[in-house]
View 1: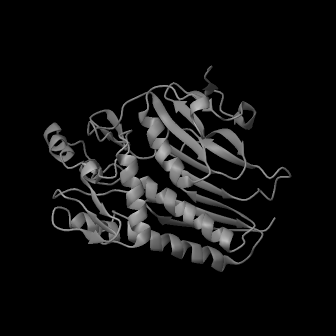
View 2: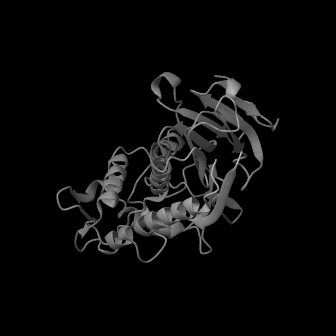
Amino acid sequence: MIKIEKTWHAMGTINQLTLFGTRQVNELDATIALVNHYEDLLTVNRTQSTVMAVNQAAGAHPVAVPPIVYQLIKRAVYESQQHFGFNVAIGPLVNLWHIGFADAKVPSDTAITQVRQKIVSDGIILDDDALTVYLPVAGMALDLGAIAKGYIADRVKDYWQAQGQMAGIINFGGNIVLLNAAPHNDDGRWTIGVRDPLVRHGATIALLTTPAMSIVTSGVAERHLVANGQTYHHIIDPETGYPHDNELASVTVLSPKSIDGEVETTRLFFNDGPIEADDYPFGAIFIYRDRSIRLVNINPADFKIIQPTFYIKEA
């Protein structure tokens, strides 16, 4: 089967695009240009972007943004107001810890307390007519983070479908989107490796067989800070100002849309109680620090463990 691939760095991670059934490398170049365009609008890791313009005007005035940016911020504000762990206004806390960057550090309790006063997503003012976003408190800062990555992955899939692509894989770090049936398998199903979430860039511990789907994983090992003999991961609880502490090592969500998977990995990571299959619309894989694994709405026959130190937890 003919395939083409390209790998590049964007959105704070290593990304890979794979298309099957074509030799038109220019299609990948156009896709990368599309991703870079969205990153230019949505990133907070540069001094200039549309979202950074909103942040820089905090406490001063509303900022008009393009419709796609407005709708994504509106979705992020809505999810934040459900108070399940995701908070689009978490920017000041992310900047304070800066986990994943060279200047990462453990902040003082005083600094965390001060910054938490600016994590007020309920106060964000949106104007549907003017398409403006206003952060009413000086020092507030949006951080669309993973929800932006999911949004961009969905837009790439839409673009490939519009171009009539046969099949493909969008891999944005812990975010994978599969397009159409796998051309190399008679049943059209894809096989995806599940990594060891306890080790950065961990080896594959299991193989997941799935139809075309979005597969989003959030874990504690890829971005973390080690200080004074203690490890701090990057999943920060906006209610405490510290990384959320539980027994989970990673959560993977299978969903039709990647943006939903990004939202749900956060919801499930912060939900310390059990999730029941009958009450949950997506598939999920929970991997715990004790190396046990729990599957929700996933057929065990489609999940093959290849690292025997991991095991399926009994329901």
